[in-house]
Length: 134
Image (cartoon, rainbow, N blue to C red; front, side, top):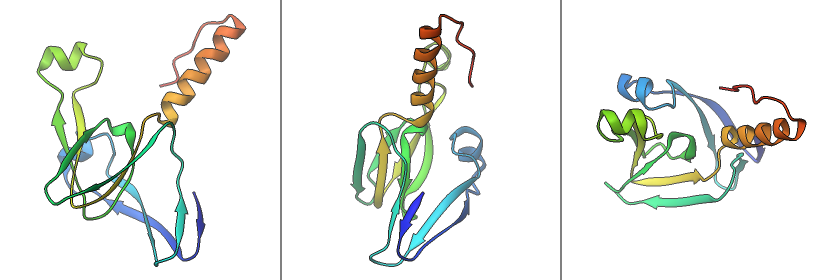
C-alpha cells in the first residue's frame, strides 16, 4: 500500500465466530484511517467496482472479490445452496454479504487468481507439470 497525506494503518478484529471461521476473511483485518484529503492506494485486479450501499442494502460477493469497505458496512455470510451444490458447484459453501450503509470496493480478478493463471501459463510453456500452489 502507498499513501499520500495523513494515513494510518492498523488492525481490526472481527469478534463474530461465524464470519471468522466460514467467511474467509479471518479474524484480523487491516484497517486504514486518515484525515480528509488523504489517499491510500490499494492493490486490486481486473475491474474495480465501487458501490455506495444504502442502509439495509446487501451485496453478495465471493470473498476474494472484496478490496475494502467502510466501518459502517456489516460483514456476514450466506450459504451457496444445499450440500450437493456446495460440494459439486465449484463455489464453496459460503459467500460473503456486505450490508450498508457505506462504501464498498470490489474486484473481478484477485491476486490469487492472477498468480494461478500466470503459473499455469509458465508451466505449460516449459512443458512441465503444474504444481499445486494452494
